[in-house]
Image (cartoon, rainbow, N blue to C red; front, side, top):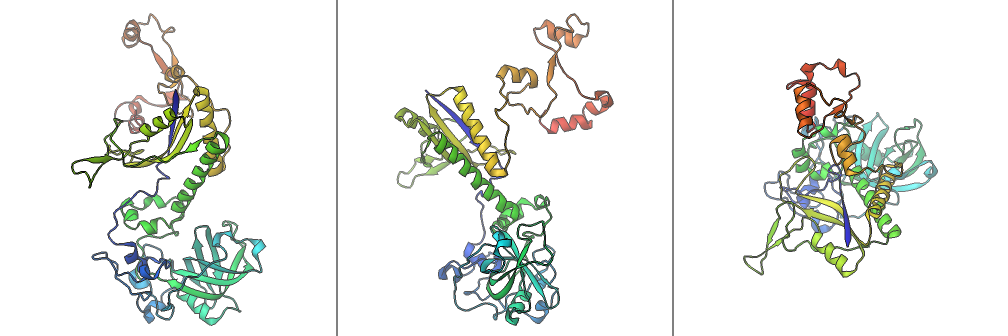
Length: 458
């Protein structure tokens, strides 16, 4: 005997689905501000028809005097910035030698306790501001960003390099951690800044960015068209919201693994992806076999076949963060491939499954978003759920539970109710607070309440 439970990832966190990219990553690296990874990749030519010119090594063009004279206070990452307003990199800023600088500190982890230290930071330019002699730049990596500033001890060459920077340039900064005169309580690094002593520009951006990486106000990221985001997926994944999604997913999976392995002694087993077709709820994706013409592998809709084999074999408790593939029509909560936490247990009962589910959900919310869920979770039978909500997976926040009126109105002359009772049915009602204020016109077809209910799936 075995029992299983499946927990699927939320679509909002699934931010790494594959997309077709017209140009290779090596062809884009010269224009997207990519740190060097190898001599071969750095020298790779542009892909045909990619729209991104090929660049030998680190040479990306020359800066004209007009380009250098543009307003340095403007956010070059803004979609409104024109190509003329973004300076191509001058040969004086880029070395002809390949280098692999190493950082000793991440940008978003600097705090008051680091004041007085000399640090080396690597990352992307978030914003740059020239205040007439004093230049500020925010440098960003995966942990956040910190302000870089030129002070009286900063060499002129470093100040010039800071003044020439534009959004998404890749830089290496060596400098002294100082206390900011005007602190910013809205960001973790708002109490400190780094006075630059050495600035190395590792790569530049030679064309206008399709959208701002971090300049959009909170909540406006959704206004970006998905087609634009997928076309420029590398840039899209740099946006703070996408970075948060990736890190949230990693933290959540880490918490789930800890519960399963440390508290319940589960065994993680990776099952095959190329397998035989098994009857499930959707069509299979097929992969033709080169060695056996006419035969195909099927991509698994779930590891159902393999986890049942493991239970029969005595594995006892199995789990896997499994990739699943289903060829079916798309809708809001469904896509061709997704990740699910797949679980199988031998010799357990309903309470065992529900207790495990509670532990997993509490750990995921605590580690992911610092929320302590109240325990124990409310439990209800199927009959109770259908009676009160008319649904086997009710949203209990709804509050408007159905009340049965069959006995109360038995013998009524109202034909609609009387006919239902005579046929053995029931009559239920919902008590709507201040319902008298809702006119019949709003409840009928084409009314706003009617249309909202239909849009919600009624």
